[in-house]
Amino acid sequence: MDSSLYFGKVSHHRKSPKIHNLEYKVFMAHLFLDELPMVFKNRLFWAVNRPNLCSFQRSDYHRPEINSLDEAIRETMSEQLSEDIKGRISILTHLRTFGYCFNPVTFYYLWSDDLTTPLVVMTEITNTPWGERYVKCFRWAESEKNSRSAHEFRKEFHVSPFIGMDVEYDWRFQTPKEKNHIDMFLRQNGKLFFSAHLHLKQRIINSGNLAWALLRFPFMTIKVTAAIYWNALLLRLKGCPFYSHPEQSNVKHD
Image (tube, rainbow, N blue to C red; front, side):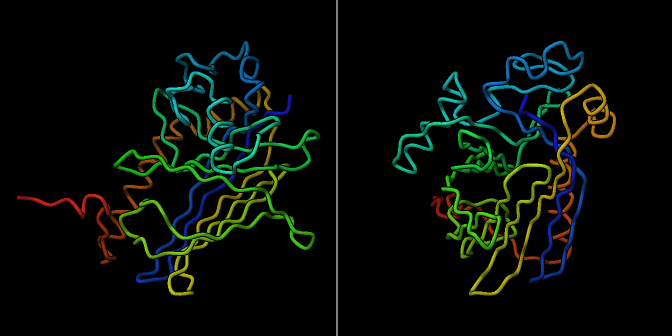
């Protein structure tokens, strides 16, 4: 089985207009979509598309109106990249725990035939409290000097009310193997003011690691949501500027 678990940490570092750092530990599942029917088979507290303490639910992910997540991802990759998408697909995500799921960002990988490197990575960002989703696909562009695929682009989607829209993104992806590092750098007028980092170590899916994930992180997605709102409060108290949702800001009131 090629699916696995990842354990590690998320960290954010804000340099301006106020210094603010956060860090918390996480576990995530890296699941190949063609292995979903068997990945949690005969696991007492784990399930796919049915309730359990921890479960993968199709409705939590990209274009839930399409029954097949694999089909939905291929369609979006094909539309954004204008090419025929072939290969196995995996998803790196937080699972639904105790009936609740929220993923600030989920990553989808299209793999080469030998699974040595991704061909495409697709990010799906969900903002809160609006619950909107934004998807962007990148062709894997690993250089000979650097084992990471780097991508720069203008911000297109309102995520945090404490970061405006006039921002340049710099995303850097490492091939998810024994270690998986994903880094995001935000610049305004060429100056770095914020970075976010996901640093993970791989573990096989077995009874011991599944038990540890539930014991160590019984309320994983609740913890993620709580951390977002708690740190939003701290930023507000520190006096960071608040940026309203652009669409809401443009609404005219009589």
